[in-house]
Amino acid sequence: MVLETKTLEEKARGLLKERGVSVVDIAKLVMYLQKDYIPGLTLEDCIESVDSVLSKREVHNTILTGIQLDVLAEEDQLLQPLQDIVAKDEGLYGIDEILALSIINVYGSIGFTNYGYIDKVKPGILQMLNDHNGPRVHTFLDDIVGAIAASGASRLAHQYPDKADGLTG
Image (tube, rainbow, N blue to C red):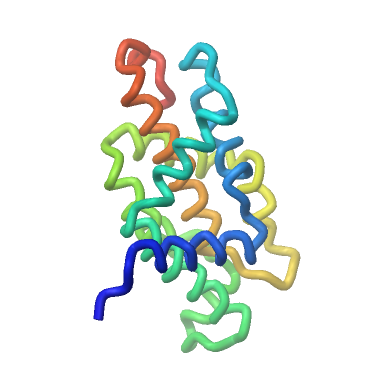
């Protein structure tokens, strides 16, 4: 049985909200990435772009999978040594980034450069998600949110191809 896309989208959006991430938080990251390259860009434009990204089934599947793994790590339910690796967000564990790239693949090569940049500087909500001092594990979620933002930024960049020479990357 294949679930309806609407059902998956509602669940994915609900999980983001439960984990403290709003569409506006992600839209602010899109604005951060594109504000210098798209004249007159508004937060509303960025929200619309994030909403478009969040309508994709590949994105729903990534959100559901990543958040489930984070929750299992919080509950100490992963097998060792994976439990320690995910709970500590070990630097050499790149599966969280690889999972996030499934979102980027939908939006082309500029998505990769946007993602790499935002994953490195971790502005806005990404800084909070990357803080390892609380009880929550966001090993997968911070990369997923960064990938959604990078995809939203890439989507906007494709709408303004005459500005492509100055795009993040």
